[in-house]
Amino acid sequence: GQILFPAATSYTGYNYGNTTIQASGAGSRIDLSHLSTLDGGGQYWDSHGYGHYYTTYVNVLAGGEVDLSGVLSANGYGNSITVDGAGSELQVTGVTSLAATSVTVQGGSSVTFDAATLLSNVGLYAIGGGQILFPAATSYTGYNYGDTAIEASGAGSWIDLSSLATFYGGGEYSDSHGYGHYYTTYVNALAGGKVDLAGAVSHRNVITVDGAESVLGVA
Image (cartoon, rainbow, N blue to C red; front, side, top):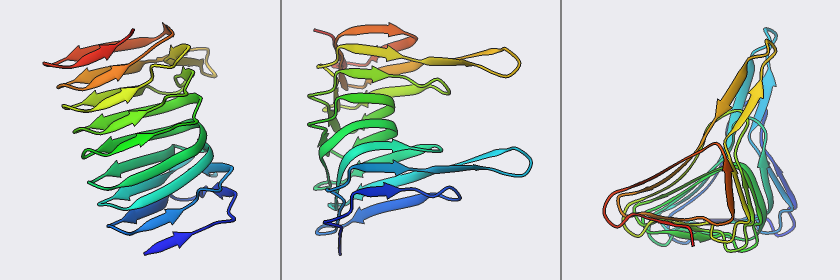
């Protein structure tokens, strides 16, 4: 099946529950390629003052295709993008920046964010031969309220951030009692995976390279 939105310019998540965009199976397609903004996830505070946080899931599975564009950002827990399976395609040529988003690519799939220049609070996971490439990205920033991770695991897995000018990982905040909370960006090249970094790497990062043929490219 196919669901096409040739005139849609804005997508917003839901403050009271998770939302999902999913194309599964050969020939399945969801076209959101004319978006200017995708503001996923959601959040609300109940009468007791407790926060509730939700996610927008974008799943491209078993040969399906999802086309996105514009600025990817979020409320709540943000966006979770998964590309898995031979022939699965996430088309992101028009995506210009990512924030509050995790991207997982596995099963030999590859995703290239041709135009994305800014990454903030982004988790990247290339698994089992998956590849996530950012040929135009110049800035990566961590998250003040939690850890972030960039991980390539398995032979052929690759995360390319080789055009960065700055990599400012981790984050921190002070709570209402004056206590500091500190977070880390973890960069892992494991079991034959490869991560390419560049630019000024600073702040709070932990980098691990483990396993035969694993590579951290820092040229």
